[in-house]
Length: 121
Image (cartoon, rainbow, N blue to C red; front, side, top):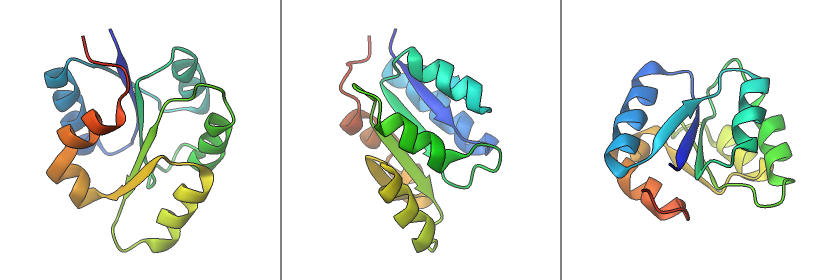
């Protein structure tokens, strides 16, 4: 079954994404460390959801590394709408799309469906 990789440290966001992913037919995996992230990416997730406020992952480094990987999955990065600097850093590091936390909450199913190329089964 296709899976979504969650690189988030906000439990509320993570549980919301997990429930939505399940409803859409995806499994989810969490990456809380650099090694967990790299191992999960090697298993080819359909989509990476990356919280730019993640305090334990070097998300910019991992995002750049991911973008340099052939066949890398799309990355939906998200964070506070007022943090323009972080939004710009995420885009420069290679995020496929960046949305504000409020947009993520309002349109999570649509965002997942729009960015996944692997149909949920």
